[in-house]
Structures are given as C-alpha cells and as structure tokens.
Image 1 (spheres, rainbow, N blue to C red):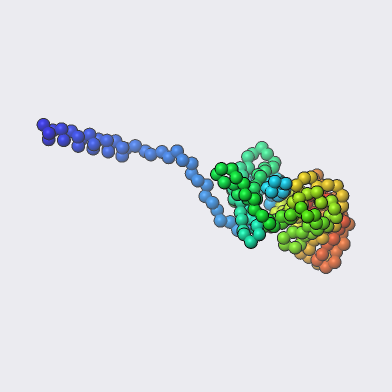
Image 2 (cartoon, helix red, strand yellow):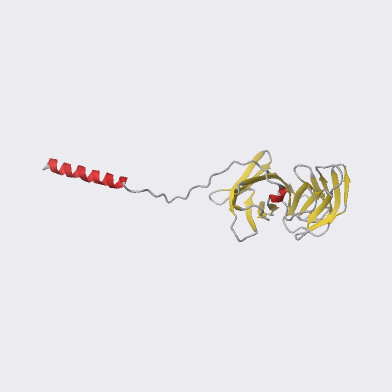
Length: 260
C-alpha cells in the first residue's frame, strides 16, 4: 500500500513539472530604453533645439525646450554646476509629448530629504547642461553661468568669455541672472552664425531699456549683432574691431552675431 501511494505521488509531481514546462512565460515589465553614449554637438546649430534656462527667486532654474527641429520622444538632462568647491548635478528626464511646441522642467539647485527638508547649494556659479534626445538620438552640451545678483552688478558674461552685456541698473531688482550659451536658434537668421547664440534670463521678465553687447566672433572682419524680440530678429548697428563685435541693443532674451 505504501509503495502504491509513493508511486502515485511521484506521478503527480512529474505531471506538474511536465505541464509547467509546456507553458510560455510572459513578462509584464516594459523593456527599458537603452541609454546611449553619444558625442556632443555633432549636428549643426540650425538643427538644434532652442533651449532656455531661467532662474527663480527660490534658487531653482526652469529648463524650457522649444523649437524642436529634429524629432524626439524624450530627453535626458544633466545640469552640472559648481557650488563653492563642490561639483553638483541634477539628473532627470522629460517626456516630449506630441502636440506641444515647448516643454518645461523646474530643477532645484540643492537637495531634498525623504522628509521634505530642502538644503540649498551655496555659491552656485553655473556649469554645463547636457541634453540627450531619443528617437533620432543626438546630444548637445553647452555652458551656463549663474550670477548671484543680490549685490547688484551691471556686467553679465558667459562662462566661455565670448559674450557680455552691460545693463547699467536695469537688472538690479533681480536676485539671480543666467547667461546661457544656447545650443540652437529660435528662428533662422540671415548670414552665417559667427558667435552665439547667447540667452539672458532673470527671475522675472526682462525690463525695457538698452544695454551694450560685446561678442567675440570666429572670423575677423564684418559681423552684425542681432537680437530676438520673441517674434523676429532685430538688427543693431555693430562696430567690429578684429574679432570683437559691439552694439547698443534693446534688452532681449537672445543675441547672435552673423557675418554680413
């Protein structure tokens, strides 16, 4: 009797094993998107998106991507910056939903604990913003300068030293200002780009008024400084000395120098 029961038990176990082998296993987990290692700034400026970084009074920055000229479904960002003697970075992604022409993300210049306590990074001076776009798969990387304007200054310069704007007292009410070496243009320009584009942003809308822009160009000779009004490029009378171009300009978001 014991042998008979033992034999029945072995047959049941074997049947279970065999029936399990015949089933197909279906995974419900989505296939993760592979992270690509791509070279930066390979595509021409004319094909790069127009991007802005604007500071807030709460020590955040608002990343906005617009004028997307090459197809993309999502973008990974790495906002690297110096904070005193430390190097920090904010890393994340942004879904580029169809049917929109601009996408934004607010990024904290600091850290947040599990309990919600925020620690701000001090003495931030800016760094590099790297953007990796997925679909056509391309990467852009550009410098940004974060200027603490709580003790107001009048001269704001890019990290690469090739752009500066003298604003007088126009931006004295803005505690933080960013000068960003923009990867792309909001709209096509006439002529060949020989410097820029560079974008200027503050904690609120830029005031009306005039300033002096100086740009170092890639060519010796004639250059014309243009500013983006939000609707079109405005041309400003430009003086050129070697590779340095200077113009009295309206306070605008973005400037570029083109060959005449």
